[in-house]
Length: 201
Image (tube, rainbow, N blue to C red):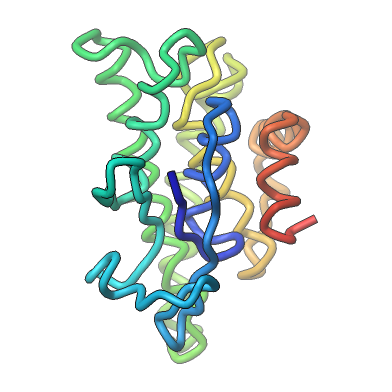
């Protein structure tokens, strides 16, 4: 398998999941402005959407969208329980969290990266993000991970999204449970491996 990525982008969550699952894979960095990969391919021929992640499977097909990729990866090594069994209520809880992270958190951080968006527009975005993160903060007051005591691919994704705070001057000081959670996830060997591979540490 080959993961197409941009360092520190949402593709990092898929990268962490691949490391956690113990799968054999390559990584190929995308040059965003040119839409070419480090290996010299036209990325738009791989993923016409033009953004990461994209996972090229061993049989040649390409899977896109991080939420789908992470669940696929988890299902390749079910014994690790990176995703609950398909059809179980726990699996729907996982999908609930993955969708919340994608739509309510990930997309709330996106405008904060855009230098062309004026500060008066970003202020209500930050306010909404604080409310959304408050919900996660309260959840993590009573459990180690999003699904309780079991680490899943949803935690891979949340960790990456929260890591963007330092790049957009969004303080997490009011969220001690989130800060402890970030430290807990960052200490995992698979997370360290992915961060090192992407040149982030």
